Image (cartoon, rainbow, N blue to C red; front, side, top):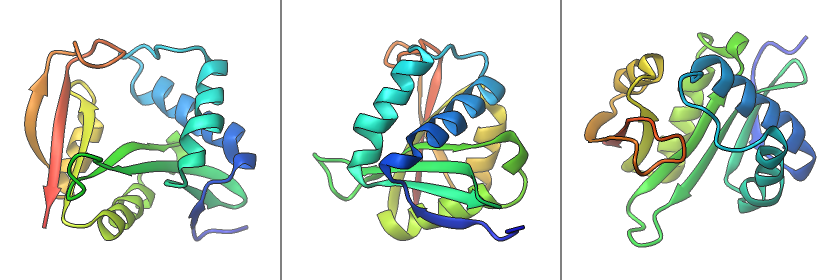
Length: 157
């Protein structure tokens, strides 16, 4: 049994397993924020749009994908990197996998990284704050699909 997580770039063949991580994590940890699309639409988006960007990392443990992270760079300001998505299966939380993903993002994106999370996602907020992210803006939810209040975080070294 593989105990050490393996990090690699997601491939098209990972789409179903990445979707499972995304949906399971969202439904478990962010149940207050309804997913705006059907499970099938989420799968199509992950397979046809998210993974082809080449900026999706998956985490495998014992042959199972237990986490995923999607990164991007602000096209209008390339000095700002974004963590667009970071999700773990519930059983992977608390094993430093999220920390390892954050460290990969910091290494890849550089000194200025932003991300959004929901204000009510207390666990995620504590996690990001513990890793040096600072809240820089609070939103009322009008700019996200879930219509839930959010918070913009930024990390800079």
